[in-house]
Length: 270
Image (tube, rainbow, N blue to C red; front, side, top):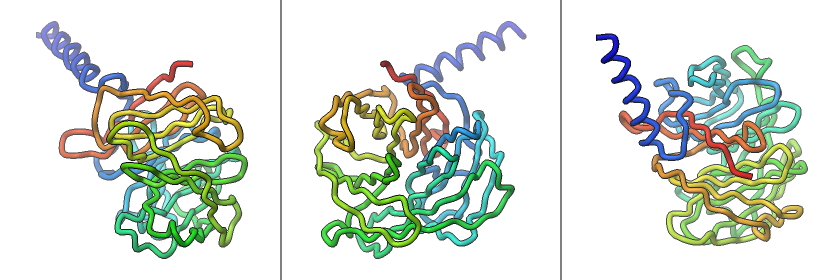
């Protein structure tokens, strides 16, 4: 009986590995978190930090690698209008991007700065950056961003050409500036999350079934660098991506019935 159980268990994990393609499942996100929309890893914590999408709690969660909630932080002065992505700085501060705009009618775009969440017990207030978008870009839907050289780079979610704007990392009202417009080749190229490696040399852009790895760029001319498509051989509603190391990334997807709701790891080839 024990032998048969071990064989079944081994077969289960083999099938699980096959079903997730190139992605390695390392954790099952707590069932209470249905719509995880971002993931971030910071240097002074071994937790995976996540948030939920529009209409959910204004909370920041720290998960252990197995997906269990270790930290549950209420951001008391924030409102989850449409929280979409997370980024962080070298001091261990996390920034929440409240800039989703599915209906194109949003008037205020906000980034919340949570200082050193690794040291917070259960409640805090955030510092607030309010973004003034260029007039022609106010109806765009922004879903991903990262921080580089003290500027946030926000990416619109488009099926065709998307826009990239940058915003100064300064508390208060800041004007966004259009950086570029670009069209990734092929279909199904909506960007749902983004990150940049700690060494600043690699950008990753997430899609439901693949990522784009961008390297060999200078300054913020990202799309003049080398662009490589990395297929997952697995499709789900992936909404969060972050670097754990310069070569290892973590990915989260939303739970849809019995599918998804996982933390995945993927090793990027040099």
